[in-house]
Amino acid sequence: MYMLKKTWFFGSSAVFTQQPTDLVVVAGQPVTLPCTIPGYHGMVLWLRDGMALGVNRDLSGYPRYDIIGDHSKGEYHLLIQRTEIQDDAFFECQAIQAAIRSRPARLTVLGKS
Image (tube, rainbow, N blue to C red):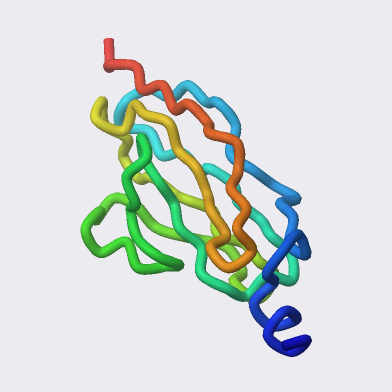
């Protein structure tokens, strides 16, 4: 049981050192939403308006989205390349096994003028 807790971080062992924050970006520009959970090696899930984008680095349904950063350091930053108006939403990072979630961050995408 102890090993399971140590490996999967059940409870409050894992904490965010970086969380996404509210941002405003002009459509067409890239943006990175940070998510860092040092020492955590379980599944990480990004959500957009409450809907799952994918687990860990697999965001195959979203070709403009990538998870970047050093996985071994607990970095799971969401990079959105060439933002579009549809990216205007709330984003959240979740550490599944640790049962923790980041604060929701509002990404506001402005139309090009």
